[in-house]
Structures are given as C-alpha cells and as structure tokens.
Image (cartoon, rainbow, N blue to C red; front, side, top):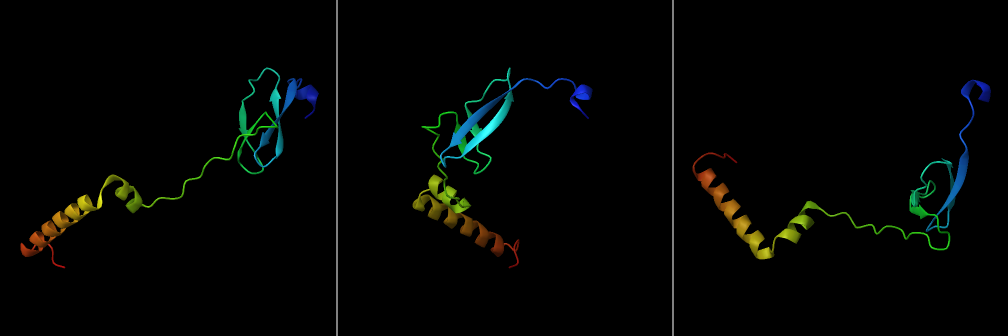
Length: 102
C-alpha cells in the first residue's frame, strides 16, 4: 500500500536518549506527543535520559534473598529457638497420641 491509500503520515520528531553506557538511542514520536523524560535503552535495558552529559545511573541491584533471610530479618535467634521448641513439642505430643506414624 502506498501513502495515497493510507493517507498522510503524521508529522514526526526524533528524540535522542542517552544511558549510563553512553548508548544513544533515537526514538521517533509524533510532533504532538508528550516526550517522556526517561526511556529504557533498547541496547542494554538501562534507563536513559535526554541529557547526554548526565545520564541516569544504573539501578542498584539487590542480591536474591532466600526465605530464610527474610525470616531472619523478622525474628531474633532467641525467638526462632522458642518457635522451634514449641513446634517440636507439638509434634512429639501428636506422635505420642498416635496422630503421626513416622
């Protein structure tokens, strides 16, 4: 299909964003569109901004935390020992009553 069948193309503008790795990515927007302050770099995925001299820093990546790490944030060692003792006592009582066979 040619332009005659589709109609006139909307007026466009080119906007260049810069990431912390100094990639320059050119994005095309309609002239009447609101230009966002930041854009994800298509090459590396880092945030990019319009300021080439001061691109946004890479986001801080926190290491993966296990379930145990989250529990240790909420409970002290003493609280954990008390909870474990209570759970073991309950388990032993259930075994004595014959509710658990292993």
